[in-house]
Length: 508
Image (cartoon, rainbow, N blue to C red; front, side, top):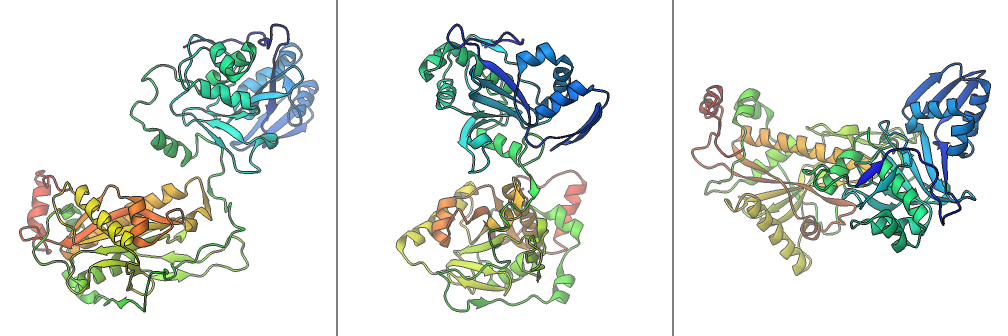
């Protein structure tokens, strides 16, 4: 693809009716004028501009209410145009027909955005493999429009006002010239050229085979770009976008498959725990993934201690009922953003002394296991799938004793947090993993975190609606075999090896 990076005359739609290039300030921009000085308030901050001149100030104020033709600005308001070039991330750019009917609008979503400039791409063009077309939720579109083209590689969001514009974008899923894509979309060559210019200037086209972030998968790059501020303009963090919907309870209620009061678990004696546990540094140095087990399985008492020390609800922090943003928080042994406490732990038990095989939910508030009996063969088959997947995740090295499936009640996070909810729950899974590793290592158990799991199998085995609560982590617990350090004294060799720089072999 070759791009001529200029501001040429507006391309003609049919040889005689030129398209219009329209500029306007983003709707969030507020302009406060004091004589010849202005202050621009916008999502990224504030800027003061001095001594603009009354005529330029008036034209700038007009841009908060209506579009301005780029060709006319270039003739009559050169000073204003230069100002807009200083703050291009505040300016939307639209291609429209002679009557002003818009075809597409480029909206800057990052401070790195520059005016797209209506460049004229030549040669064959192809859409970026990171670009995607979607419908915005009702009420988020511009002037009633809701179909947008986005890409984590692009500092713009492209609003498509006409179906032909969407067809043009689809045509560029294969390498084509702008004229060929316009013909397929039922557009004039001039419209195709103008839209191709917006796509090129906005960062939606592939600059060359293999040149676009080759080590990134589409979903990973999109997740990274959208879950951190900087490359999008969506409200991020604790914005309480769903405050009109009741917040989920702090403590999960018993599920429909759970029967009876469950199994009360013993509470560990803290004096015994403190006397037995190695020092933190020894546990950190001794931590490793253990993919082999002793002949005698882990016991119910050991599971009870592990769950109590790692995942119990220490207390529920009451929210202020008079505060529309108030909600009950949860305190656990591991940290969590906003005290949301959205993670749950389910046990798929294969071998455990004192506990029958099957599926259980850890009731973290009551320190109790709640059995989830299988209600039909599909659930039992899904249980087998989970266990088999865990076996495969260890390179088929160990038959699981107990698989912990960590789930997230997503609504606990998304009720408060926008854009970062899923990223935040993965951070919570990470600190839960480390807490499991450290406590299990201190207890002399065999811990092993897994890298992935089957979402659908977990939903079927655990009886969950995966869109409301779904698996986000898997962790194996078993009895530590002979020869692997189990006590404070046993860690001595491990610590000595670490100090000598010898490492611990393959099991990490």
